[in-house]
Length: 251
Ligand code: BJW
Image (tube, rainbow, N blue to C red; front, top):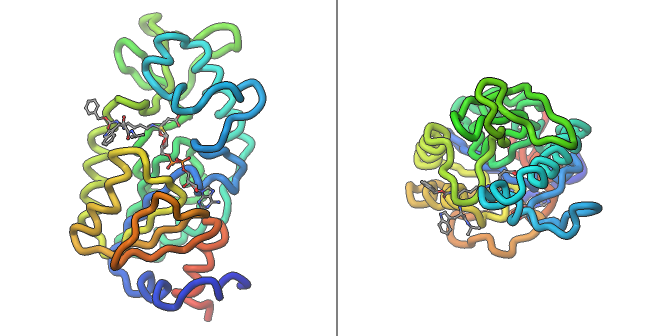
């Protein structure tokens, strides 16, 4: 594979030698599937909004129809997208490494579509809606462009089953992610700006417990540096398969 040369041998050796690996992914892992990241500017009709202003309970309370429109547009983008080599590489790691935990901040479902079976979803899923009154979760609901969807049982407004700013993360998922961070010897942080808590603290929980970290990102601005933290700068869809190939060269 052409990109194997980009992987420093000591980084490949970290992956090869790890007994327990936890990987945290962010929007950058789906960028090569054509799904814009959160820090990318929105385009077209949505250009005058910032994602940070739409992913809040306040935005939904102010204008549920606007927020539903944004999620509808994103579901359409995801429906057209296919998993990329980074998703597939992570699915292959799950199959290869006995103690491997995949934690994602993404709501697009592409890790499962790539074949990952155990995925901890910290920020919910675009594929679900939830009753804003009773919390009932739905995988199918009626939705038109002109009307905001409502709960078939009680008539209250439905909302996307995702975690907005200021809301707690699903407790069980967060606990499982924290345990996996504390108990790995190698932590992979892939395609995330590492700005949004509590996910952003997971790599540092791992470091505090003695793990090493490999950061894969197209840019390193804002990423922590230090001893035991290795940076691979580039696209996850190229670097992850190259890293695996460098760690376990095809025989
Ligand atoms: C590539 C690439 C390629 C591109 N290859 N790389 C402690 C300190 C300070 C603040 C807080 C704190 N604790 C809580 C907060 C507040 C807040 C927060 O963190 N704010 C910060 C912005 C300062 N956190 C919260 O509010 C969280 N809730 C909470 O903590 O609740 C506590 C509570 C307890 C009890 C009761 C009540 C409350 C909730 C956070 C929810 C985040 N939700 C969103 C929306 C999800 C739904 C949706 O998708 O619509 O999650 S926001 C958005 O950010 C989304 C993402 O999952 C998340 C992270 O973004 P991510 O994935 O890192 O994407 P980007 O776009 O930022 O970065 C992409 C990266 O990829 C970049 O680095 C690129 O360079 C890179 N890249 N192409 C490799 N090909």
